[in-house]
Length: 586
Image (cartoon, rainbow, N blue to C red; front, side, top):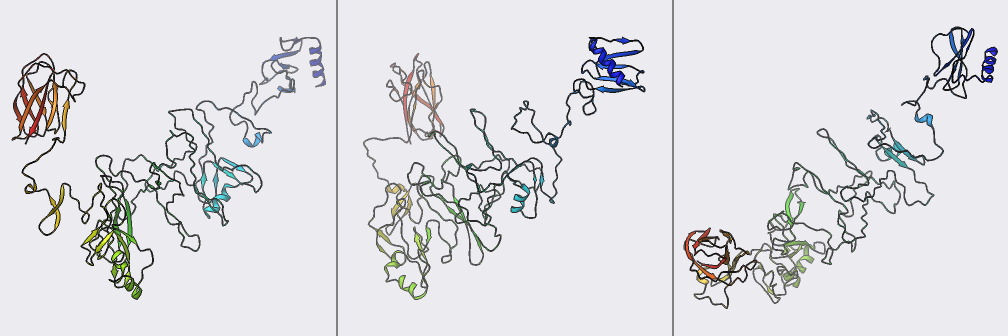
């Protein structure tokens, strides 16, 4: 071997380049290969690899490496030649912990994937990609809340916050996003849960806060912050929406299958029962929407089109005999914007049924039974006339509104919200007189009734609800002016093409295009017995676009009609816009 190495040294010293050419020594050939030699060899042959300088010798018919040629290795992961890295060369454990933070970029649409078949048995915590800070353990934290159970986590972040330190907050999982786009929805954290089989249970997200037995200063299951710096911004702190193709089951005996918000009774880990201190609370001075008196709950309109009252509050109750009471509805406004507070179909413990016009509120104090109650609510007591519904010596309820099923009530002026000033009230509750004016805007109701187009009519004994009777109309009607309910005005620089759409107007003025000899006006005001008057005018007052009305005199002739639909008249053809007015009697 020493002889071979000495021979190699002499070759290099004699300035013979083993990288550039093959040098042949009689009986001892030396090769210059581009890669490591393979296969069988002849005795006394040397092979110098031109790419690395590695030296191989032939001994006993096989090639053996003599030197590495400048520190090069003969193979990498059993691969020789021009070795390049391939997947699986190293594991994360072999790479180890880098001394400094390193960043690397991923190609477009080439995500960093961590794949695993996953374990879903409830025998151990199954974690795959974790960020664990300060010794925090997802298995420990999950078990603290769901003792005896385990989870399979696709991504787990866990932070054990120390007693020391002054960072603003620690985040188990954080999502941050900013946006310059007017078309892209920017979402900080997204959770999507899809059901792929009947009967599955899914949560889009499920935040949990636990005081662990300590007195917590601030405890929020979920906090939503909306930071507004521009008055033109719009949105909602919490928006409950959805995309449905089916209507979940509705019910008048419960909240149905899909309430927007459901507050359930807290589960008692021990002791109990326990209750939320309020189902929905608006903090002091927290809301205001123009009116200046707050807007804690805003009831939207009940129907998407047409006249509609506001949406209702639906209440349920249970009697002492365990009968469930449903159908208690409270409306805030009717379709005419009048205040309307209504209970419907509500049995009462002391009356067979509350009517639909009163508003019942509990007494301020607890019910007073026996002698004390009888004294307070006796017929001689002033309290009896104003507040009591006396039932066997029990001070029961304070009642607001006209309720004929009670013996004594506090009447309310419809719409003004304060009690009427009573000058007298009888024990049977049928006669009330007042010195307080009734609202001129909302008027008043008799037992809640106010039939449209009716009025109070004297029948010789009482004033009763009645429709307008022909006998009550005067023989003569006088007035400074007479105005129809609607007035049809159709103009246009070149007139309005026949038929004119006047809907139900009994009077109007129409501009007619040039060179017409007949014209139809559609109006349901015309009847089979109507007198229809048509008159030519040159005055364009009130006509849209102020057309120039011809002054050529014409004598229009009303020639045909279709009851409840239209009438037609003829005129002389004139090469300019003609204007006519009409009115219908009967």
